[in-house]
Length: 168
Image (tube, rainbow, N blue to C red; front, side):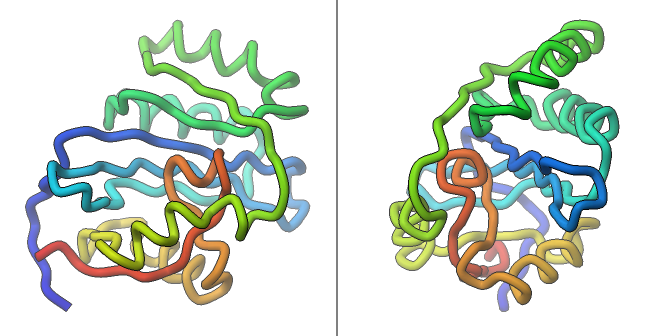
């Protein structure tokens, strides 16, 4: 594994897979991914926990302010209908601005992830070794190798393979 401490992405985007129930076995995951001019993806940040909506909304807000992604993908549905107004209000209050894009959940997660899986298989997913969230990434990758969540796919398809390379 080759490691570097400098990120190379020129643009970033993000996505979330929001948990339906607090401590119901499901995790809320926020992911920020950057893409460099050669179309290689870099996992820039990851937040994953079982938490109530007020906690994951604050984590979302912090990541928006820290990473400043061009857009944030999220699944459209009950969660957005229920907590969407609160999320929007907190974003405005804390000046956490990004373009939120909602996507309808259709079909099987593995099928929805095919384009991301193909890109990762050909070009890899670069991560920074030693990142504070690296342990969470390892848990996700080992627990669900075919359903590893990544940024846009966590909302669009909520899955991709765990083919991971360190930044070189």
